[in-house]
Length: 251
Image (cartoon, rainbow, N blue to C red; front, side, top):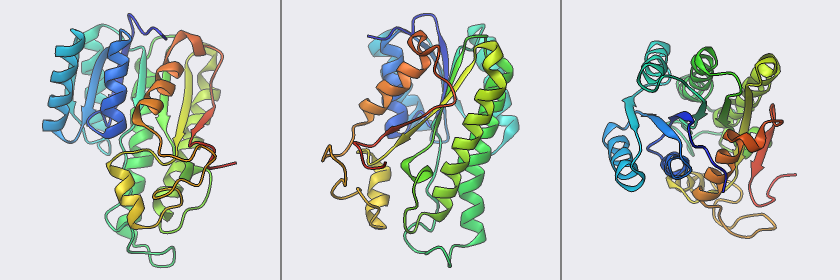
């Protein structure tokens, strides 16, 4: 089992399906956690369960990732509390308010701007704050998606945002290798979470019957395990990579 003992990891979207499971796994492997989400109640519930289960230090902060000051303050408070930052996991995201209602020729400016603000500027702001504070040899994992590799009907804004996350990830990886700071992305396919229900509403390929050699939905625990590996010292030569975890859905 990959050890994260002694590491301090900052996680956004920590109250979500993949986020909460990831936080639990990181704690099980020995990491101290600074968890952020907009859903304060769910975030505190997640943190309470982790503290009780793993007996570790967990800091929680309500953070709107579209607000750079909130992001900067969160990371600064995390470093002050724990004394360092070893890694970041940027999972906060949205598919938009109008999902399933608009095709590419009908998508509204407002919905496009909302998705890009959270999924792109939010990831950029979190990654930026983490890079400014992370210790040499640290690791950051950003949430992309199979929608960042292929086109999916009725998901124009989401797909564009996840393509952008891949670019953000690869650029940061190129710039920070001299510090042995690694930046990678995970690109999940059909994972059994609340977001999958939204995907079903727009008939996203693989959301109902997975179109993949491994003919089932993925589990949040499987994504969490991949993230834990990328954060660990077992992945010290891995950076700028996009790890697809979709059961073989995409080429």
